[in-house]
Length: 159
Length: 344
Image (cartoon, rainbow over all chains, first blue to last red; front, side):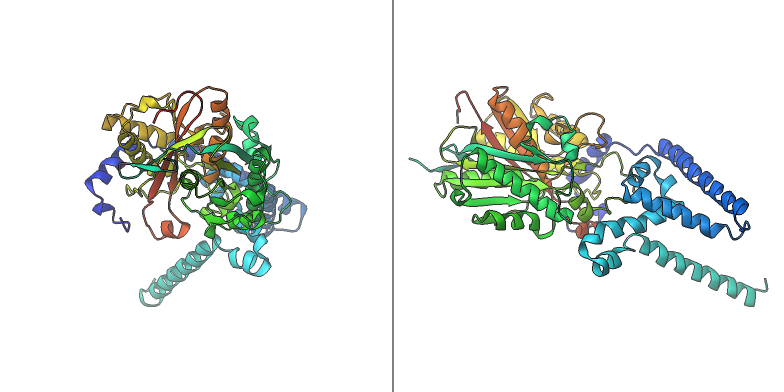
C-alpha cells in the first residue's frame, strides 16, 4: 500500500476493514448535535447579553455593538484557553464551541501558547494561523468569488 | 554451549542464557498519578513541565529520571551500562537522544513508534544472550502534550475527539538487563512485520494496529510450537478497547484459542474508569511503564509466571497522514518469565 487508493484495497484488507468497522465505536451524531445546539446556543445567548450590556450602559447602537461584543467573547476565550478549560468544554460541545467566534479565537490562541517555546517570530508568528489560516484564506477567496459573480450579474445580467 | 541464540522458525529468537531484568525504572505524570496503577510507578510528577520551558525538554527529563531510577535500583553506576537502547515518538527522537547525552552510555536510538519498548527489550536480550554486553539499559517514553503537539492539534485547541481516539501516556519506563542476577528473565522474542490493512484514520490507532499484533502473536506461537495456554498473560501495548476486541475477533476467526481473561492490554490498565481517555491509553510510554512497573511487580508477587508482551506501534507521521497515506503498523513480542520452571 503506498497511497490512498481505497478502491485498490486487496480482498484481505477489505475483509479486515469490514470486520474492524463492526467494532469501531461510532460518533454519537444525534447526541453530539443536541449538545452542540445547546452549548452553541448558550454561547450565543451570552453574546446577546454582552451586546445588550454595551447598548444599555454605553453609547453603542445595535449596529456598532457587534465589535466590542466579539472582542469581549474572544477575550474570555483567551482566558479559558490559557487556563486549559476551553478544550474540555469543546470535547463536550463539539461544533457548538467551534462555530461561534470563540472557536476561531481558540484556534488562534492555542497555537500561540503551544509554540511559545520556539520563540516569538518562528514559534508564535509562524504558527499563529496554522489552524485559522485556512479559514481566513478560503473565507476571503469565497467572498471574492461571490462578489465577482454579483458584479457580473449586475453589470451584464441586468439585475 | 553458552551464548547461543536459537532461531525458531523465521523470526523468533530463543534466549538460552535467559537474560535477567535486574531492575526497572518507571516515571509518570499527573494523569497517570490519578490512574489505576499509580502505586506501581517509582516516581510520579504533579505537573507536565518539570520546571522546563518546553514540553520536549520535560519529556527528556522524564526519560532521564526513569534511566536513573533503574540504575539506582539495580545498584549499577552509569559507567557500567554498556549500551542504551531506547526511543520515543518525537521527531528524530530528540528527547531520548538528549537524555542519552546525560547518561553517556553507548547508545542505539530506536524508532518503532509505540512498539519501541519491546523492540529495545528484544535487541537488548539478544546482545546480552550473545555475551555482547553485561549491562544494557532499554526503555521508551512519551509525553502527552509533546506528542499531541507533534501529531495532532495544539494541546489547548478545542477539537472534539471521536470515541475511537486514545490518550497518550506521559511517562517513561526502562529496564536494566544483565546476564545474571535476580529477577524476571527474558526467554524469547518474535520480531514483527509491518502490516498495513489500509486504514487511514489517525484517531483510530487500535483498529489499525490489531492485525499487526495478531500476526506477531500467531507467528510466535507457531514458531515456538506452543499453545496460547502456555502463557498466563498475553498483553498488548496500546490497542485500546477497539483494537483489543478486533484482535479477539481475528483470533476467533483464525482458530487461535486465546481467552478474554488471558488477553489484556496495557492501554486499558493504566487509567481508571472515569478518566476521559476515550478508547484507552497509547504512546511509547504506555507499554513501557505498565510492563516495567505494574506487570513485573505482579509477576514478582507470583500472580503469574509467564507473560508475552506484544508492544504495538503505528508507523505514521503527521506528514504521511496529511498526504493521505495509510497507516502501517508493527508489533514485537517478548516473553518474560519468573518463578516456576522455565521450559523452553
